[in-house]
Length: 276
Length: 301
Image (cartoon, rainbow over all chains, first blue to last red; front, top):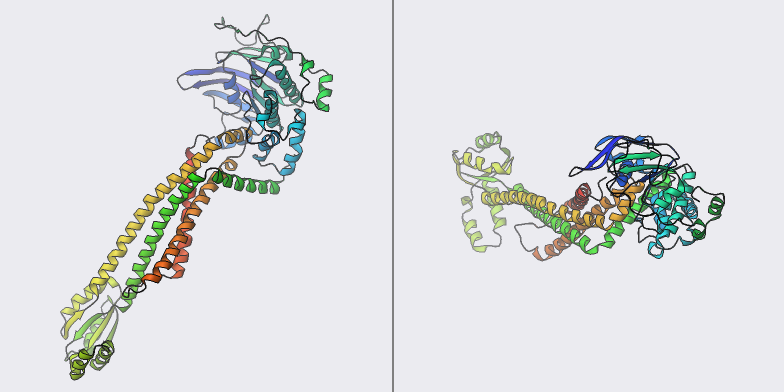
């Protein structure tokens, strides 16, 4: 679904953000990109969504040669990619419903598609009852759920999330993660950059660890910090800046049943999602 | 999730129009500034065009009357002279006015000048016969005049030369002037429109960022801004035409007393050039927004 082949990205002033990165992500995978700030997680995501072009190497996304396509083809690529950011990027003048509908409207979807898809995806994220609220009337977690709904309303093949829980407390983060997990279970490939140890350790999904632009570990069912098992990447150089953030206390999933979960949602959580 | 093209398209058109008008409403002061710039530009251009047209109509009118007049000696060989002159390439037509005809004409022309008329009636033979010559081109009257002066049987040559020269030169100057004006002011108007579009884009940068992220088509993103520019240009052009036509009508009423020069211009001319001016306004708007879109960093993909 996503393939990076010897990708190097050098920003102006000789800042190396990615160095010889080769990753292959299959359809339906859930991948965490971890590593300290400045290790190149966001750069990789930006390269995948073709916000940037690599200085070297090739990138294929959703069967398309993303690094080689001309600018005018990018909108088409973006329709198969949903994106979620730390700062939500919601439009303050639009309601929850309108924010989600916006993604469909501006890609020229007919009205009946908008009318059927938006309520469905709002139900998925548990915000049906707040469709007419404005972003400022919502909590951070709710705003991020709107943002996830907007990213997913197009039913993209791929969801790229850049620190989606970066602004949220641990309990709220778990709520977001359950939604992402749910989306992943529909067959959508999810790539998420994060700092959050607790989430990575609880989910036990593939972990790609970056350090100064290089992949230093690529491990399936991994945890945030490398412990014993060897990585498939090159050996880890002695870490200059050890990851200092102590892992937050393990969140209790049971407490996060806020915001009126939908029937669908309850069924999922009772069946025991991987996150729990 | 199959796409119904027709309805999607209708929604797009509706969206584009809504966005364009919303942008205009959001920033009224800047928009008014841009419209004014287009208005002033096109007002001056249209005014010069009309002035040029007035000059052209008048030269034409005079041209129609322009005859180089060769007054003949009483003993001149009229037929030979006439045949000779008619053979020149610069000459379109030659009329012969005999002494009695010239006398009749003079009586008519001088009907209200009793004393001159009486003198004339005493000596009808002082009005000479003449050949009236119409040049092919207005500019060639002086060539004809020179050749006539040396002919036997011609005692005097006259034409309305100074007036024609003046009129022609005014026309030329006006045309150059209006062209230069149109270019200089056009550039200013384009810059001002580009500025309003830049501001509209800046006001909507968050929306645009999200549109880019979710994969809105390039034209879908750009068309509202292009349309905004075109609407502003059209408005400026329309106001210019309305004001000019209004002022012109008003001025025509009070200035009609000037006799030698007609201030009247074909209403067909006004209509055609009015349309042209409005179209020109739209083009200025389109170029302005095009420039802005090409350079704006929130738009470039």
